[in-house]
Amino acid sequence: EPEVTQTPSHQVTQMGQEVILRCVPISNHLYFYWYRQILGQKVEFLVSFYNNEISEKSEIFDDQFSVERPDGSNFTLKIRSTKLEDSAMYFCASSQAPRIITEAFFGQGTRLTVV
Amino acid sequence: AQTVTQSQPEMSVQEAETVTLSCTYDTSENNYYLFWYKQPPSRQMILVIRQEAYKQQNATENRFSVNFQKAAKSFSLKISDSQLGDTAMYFCAFMKPYNTDKLIFGTGTRLQVFP
Image 1 (cartoon, rainbow over the protein chains, first blue to last red):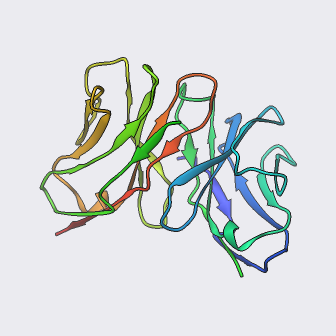
Image 2: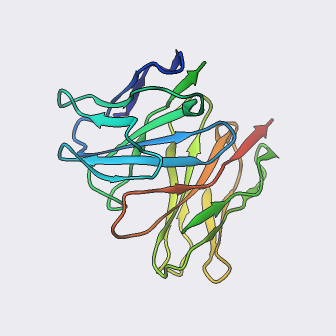
């Protein structure tokens, strides 16, 4: 069964460093998403991406964050200068069509720890 | 703004028994979608069931069913004949049907099924 894969499963980085979280969506999917969950808190939407553009972003997704699809298969989330409060589980998701037309499939997450 | 509340951080149930997970939400929208997602330990989050607010009939998927009370803004998940594989974190989520790609999640309920 096709699935969304995320690497690495756990990343530790020093405050102020740049980090790139990687996702390989399901191959025929066109819509991509990032969510995050700070420990003990809600899963929060960060951004959605379609046709090489951001289609929606939350207030969390500030200038420190960026996304791109560099090679047609990977979908990456970059945090330019990490802060302690960026420590969270980051989930990538993809879907064939937007919104609720089809199901969004999630990866198992990357746990980011900023020290 | 929409919010989703799951008031049970942890639940447990014996195998073969029935368990109900609670979810309430707040919205001024009349039409929307509600979801239950399951995240087994160290695995991807997967969609269990979804409900469209304009449909009065409660959604059912095999052993999983919902009790959707629109006036009360309540969306509980009932798991019948619980199995060990149902052990997971369960997230309730809300989505508007237009102008957004964003799922709004609750904090989750950790369900343990024991033999």
